[in-house]
Image (cartoon, rainbow, N blue to C red; front, side, top):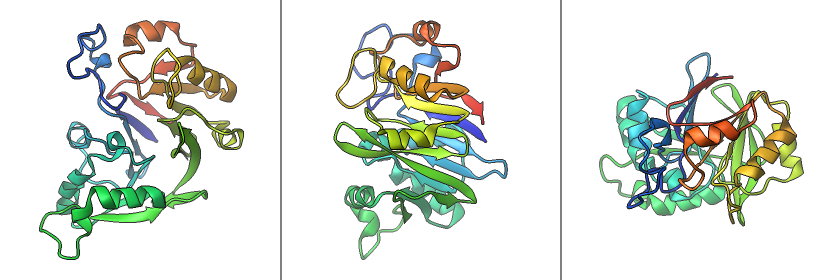
Length: 254
């Protein structure tokens, strides 16, 4: 599989509006981060997107994407769902609804957020979604097995996903041992590491590294990064050999 990091930033992205810190003012392109999202492409050219935040449109244009076989939603927060209105372009090009995989609770939230897409009398050009419900069981998308991983974002239940030997968990600060077992023997693990200091609802750097050390993947990448973590070039020098800071546009293979 080909995995492309479309966005690796936290909810406000980097640079953050109005901030003059060294990270937000960095000229290193690796320090410019859109809201977190990742694109998985299978050997038979199936495309699966995880999350569609406010930067969805620019991410699709930069990646030259003209079709998606599925969008997996980790949770309902705007920085992970706010760009879904822009699936309208894919609806028009492909003449079909876009398949959205999410928990029932998240579907209810999306129905409220994009209420106009579900009106009885539909306005021309509205986004078209086809919802598929995720529960605790594994499911298939285009013959690709996907296993949901339950995590918690403070008190909010969120989902990570295992796709073959690739695991992706963002916006989490707690994963139960039973769920961590789903992540063992992965080739690549991606996990959020918001900043150095402990945070209420996200793993900090030391917590993320502790989980990576426990799971011992061949490779691990840090994502959902805020400007409080530090410059990309600084953090990279501090990490174990099998761990890297992901950056927008990075492509890896699994």
